[in-house]
Amino acid sequence: MFGRRWLEMTWRDGLFVHWPVDPGVVADTLPERLSVATYEGDAYLGVVPFLMTDIRPRGSPIGRSFPELNLRTYVDGPNGRGVYFYNLDASDPVGVAVARRVFALPYYRARMRVDRDGDGICFASDRTHRDAPSAGFDATYEPVGEAFTPEPGSREAFLLENYRFYAAGRRLYCGEIAHEPWTLRAATVDIRTNTLFEANGFDRPERDRLVHYAEPIDVSADRLRRV
Image (cartoon, rainbow, N blue to C red; front, side):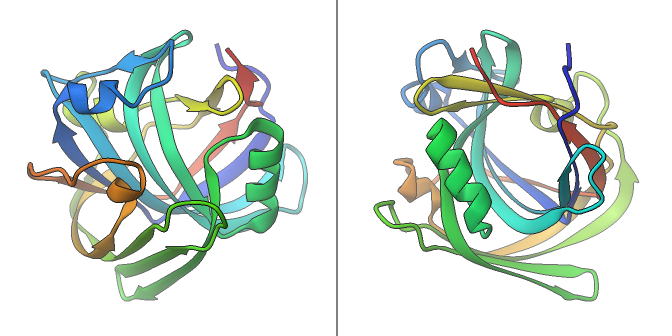
């Protein structure tokens, strides 16, 4: 059950690019107490750039905004199904420092740029964190087609309707979020650079990718907890 709504924010201009992979590719990378979650026999690796805007403690009139980029997969864990993060690159040095110092989470400082050209979004990230593998991402994406909400039991729901996440730091941590169901659109994407797989020890997936654009959504988050 979702706990206290500690943080509030809005996520904007989200791109979800997912590649199906053999479950064994993911299983070997997970910490103890987490196992691979699959859909019709496939595990998934996802690259997700987006803007976190107006991040603030509940009730505060002042918030912070910055881009974030993550590589993720989907797992079953002690608290149920959720997202597992391999990296969370962000342009906010304060947030990165706190997450790393307090929880030893895989946050890394990065130089990021987000530009708009009509309906298209250009998102570029270059990791600048010391003592971390280099990682870059540069893509332009644009929503197309009609908006839709994922149907329960669909692949889109498996990939996106997740309200819990795990990250391995000094301990295994779990966080809970709450928001309305996603409103998605199909999207086109031109990925010019993506070295997140190599930075996390993966070969580049060979199978066809799935691409979704997410409409802005208001999100509440509970405190990160050890599990």
